[in-house]
Length: 221
Ligand SMILES: Cc1cc2nc3c(=O)[nH]c(=O)nc-3n(C[C@H](O)[C@H](O)[C@H](O)COP(=O)(O)O)c2cc1C
Image 1 (spheres, protein in one colour):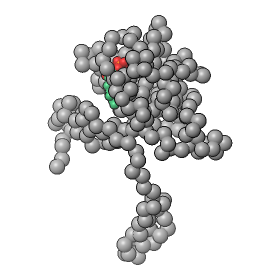
Image 2 (cartoon, rainbow, N blue to C red):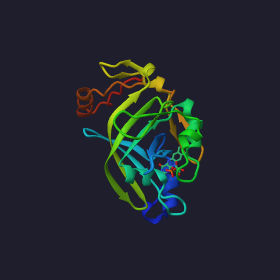
Image 3 (cartoon, rainbow, N blue to C red):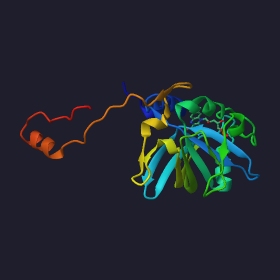
Image 4 (cartoon, helix red, strand yellow):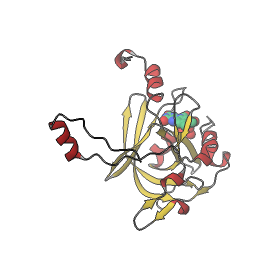
């Protein structure tokens, strides 16, 4: 079935996008306001855009009343934020921080989480998060009602027990036990159902295609 996005209202397009583009990683964004009060909220319109410069993007919609979310207000004011990643162990706490509480309410404290000072910026990160990235604003991209904030990662923290070899930058990714957001309001997934595929053998593939033979596929392992 085809859905004509040009003919659909935004709300319907949103439903289709978030129920098909899954799982989405969750940026648990921590900011501080002009008075230094901490704010945290999850954002799953989130992804890596570039490694050099190291840029991530967070898409922030307006609040239902049309006002800016606290995260965006604070990022516009302070130009820096941390992006923490959400593990299975922190999923419920993450959900608490999505509550629509008044400006100035510290959701990190509200959720019983531990703030840790960042090393390069004035915004804390969440200690319980296995990965946290200190970011400065690289750019902002207005996209209709949303704003995509592009953050340049200037430091990345990983829980010690999830680092296999710091010199070779080997991370024990399964041990991070991150979760992703699925469809609808409430669905999440763990990343525990892994399989591997060897990179395709371009020479064998092009040779088979040229000879009219079935293109070889690598086995899962
Ligand atoms: C898992 C999850 C993902 C979310 N992703 C987004 C998102 O990508 N963009 C957005 O505007 N709101 C998103 N929200 C809603 C915000 O977290 C929510 O509006 C929050 O209250 C905003 O807080 P703030 O005003 O302190 O920034 C998400 C909520 C949850 C639970």
